[in-house]
Image (cartoon, rainbow, N blue to C red; front, side):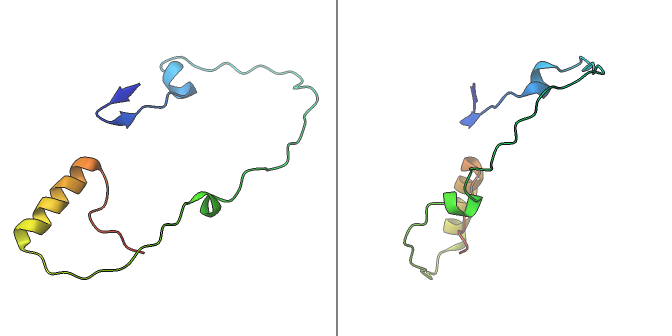
Length: 80
């Protein structure tokens, strides 16, 4: 499901909206412990080679980039 360039992820909270979850007493059964196989989130990031640049822009240009970044929901400056 898409809404304005955003992906909506539906979870149990969405589908059970307004309905109470009923818990019952009883045995769960045999539990199997699974080893954590996912890598650390830092290992999932793809690092690109970047170069820091300092430039002088007009106030109008900065406002343009700020508004475009706000529209795309991203920061207008990337701080490493």
